[in-house]
Each structure stands twice: as C-alpha cells, then as structure tokens.
Amino acid sequence: MSVTDETPRPHIGRRTVRHSLGVQPVWARDFNNLSHEWRRLFAESLGTFLLVLVAAGGPVVAAHSHGEVSQVAYVTAPGLMVMAIILFMGLVSGAHLNPVVSVAFALREEFPWRRVPGYVAAQIVGSVLACLLLWALVGRVGMLGATEPGRGIGDLQAMGMEAALTLGLLSTILGTASGAQNAGPLSALAVGGYIALAGLWSSPISGASMNPVRSLGPDLVMGNFSHYWVYVLGPLLGALLAVLCAYVLRGPGGDPHATLAAQGSLDVIPGPAKTTDVPPAGGE
Image (cartoon, rainbow, N blue to C red):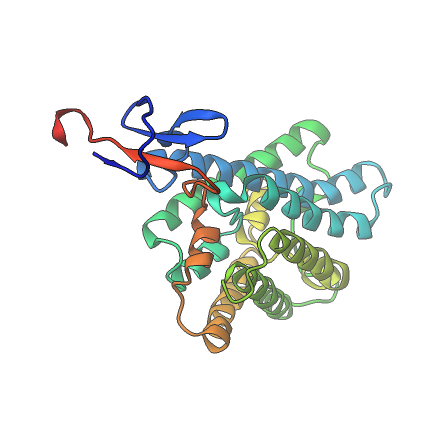
C-alpha cells in the first residue's frame, strides 16, 4: 500500500480520496477506468440529445408556430447550447457531441481509437431520441429540422461549405484544447461562438450542420437520406484538414492538456486532494 501523506484515513472500497468535504471513493471519480465508460457514454448521449433538440427543434418550432422563431434565433441557439453542455459536462466525456470531433482527437493521438465507436453510437442515440421527442411533441413539421442544401444549391456546393465550416470548427476545438492555448473554460465560449457565427452566415447554403449525427437524427426519423452523404463526407473532409492544420501549427499530437480535454478529466483531483491506493482483496 502506498500513501501520499502520513494522515491516517478510513478506506472505502479499494481506493479512497480525501476532499475538503471528507473521504470519498475514488471509483466515483476514476473515469480512466473503462468499467465506468458508461458515464462518458451517457454524457455523450445526453449532450447530443440536448444539442439536436435545440438545433433541430428551432426549425421545427418555427414551422409549427408559423415563424415565431426567427432564423437568426434558431441558428444561434445551438451555439449557446453547446457552450452550456461543455461547461456542465465537458469534464466527464470531453463533450464531443460529434463523430468527427472524436475522430479528429483520435488522429491527434489524444483520444483512444477503441472508444470512438462507443462515442459515435451514444451520439446517434441522443440525436434520434431528440428527433423522436420533437415528433411526439409537435409532429413531423419542418422536416424535423433536417439539414439540406439551400434553394439553388447543389450537393457538391453544400458539401464544400460543410467541409469549410467543419475545418474552422475543428480547428477551434483542437486549438483551444491544446496546451499551446490553454483556454480552459473559455473554450466553451470559443466553440459555442463559432457554431453560432457559422450558422448566422452560412445556414442558407448547407444548414451549417458540421455534424453527421445532428443531420442523421432528422433524416432517420423522416426516412429521407437523399442528401445525407453531404453531411458525412463534408464534415469528415473538414476534420481531416483541421488535423493537418493542427500538425502544421503545433506539430504532432499527444498534448497532455488536449488529452485531458478530449477524454474527460474528472479523474484528476484538483487542489489539495490526496489519494490512497489500497490493494484489492486477494492481492489482485
């Protein structure tokens, strides 16, 4: 048994941690333990559910209320929601909310590839549940907030826009997560602000999705995938370009600050917290 200080303390389970509020079991905060991956997956589902509820819900409520929610309002709202999500659960899962974010962090070696499928599945679940709730509440109006190329815009044009927008989004996410910027909680403001800005100027072209699962939810519930490839290929291409730009700007990945931001850092006990390691029963 190794003890980091000489103060005796009771043991709870296999490991304990001293906080200003008393002794708590470390398992409650040991998010690096894959047996607690369900916490991160739940966070990704919940966060994506809230994001899609707002992003798809804006156009749905606008259609249902005959325009009482303006386009400016419903393209800005997702950015504000993402800002809130990052602040309330970013430390749990990293608040990816988007498959291309998970892929980009994995390519930068700041997130394990083995966890990407679980994150993507959790994000899909959250997106579909949000659209099903919208359907139950107001019906299949406003195409359930589906993202499609604007009037007179071809699929290739929309894909190019999605790639360019996602390049900016992923550059913002990767940059503010890195130790080079060390933005901390301000990253929520940067990411949320970028999403709102992108929607304000580009939504008439492609819908400013930048997120394959945000687009998948409405398409899956509506049963219409005629333009869905645009919102997979475009964001994926933009993410790959963002990873390349990150390499040019900051070199290889593996940044410890970005790793904590990408994977969640609730296992890191701040301040004066101390840990005690206790061998499991049976000497395992």
